[in-house]
Amino acid sequence: MFSVIRIKDLKSGKQKKITTRSRYFAPALSPDGKIIATVHVSAQNDYAIHLLNAENGHLIKSVETPNNQFPMTPSWHPDGQQLY
Image: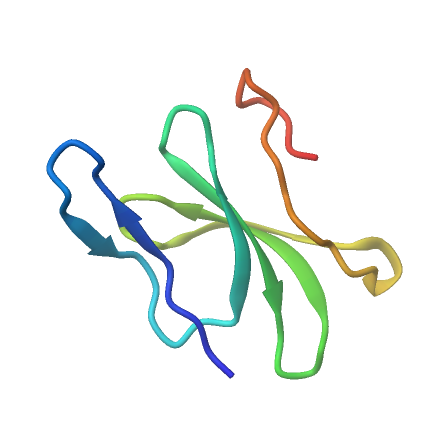
């Protein structure tokens, strides 16, 4: 199963597709709107948090979870410096 991440500009109403045919879920936009933190599940069921560029969907960083633990929903600290 695949997913698509889109961003919508609330002022203009325009949508922008960030990813296609991805294995992401639970995306969380950073407070400054520049980074999307999302849960990635590989085809082998390995879990990681991926940080994506919100403009183009390119992978910035991948953080594997200890012991392949399942991350539920990433959430940003209001200052945008930490992810929970």
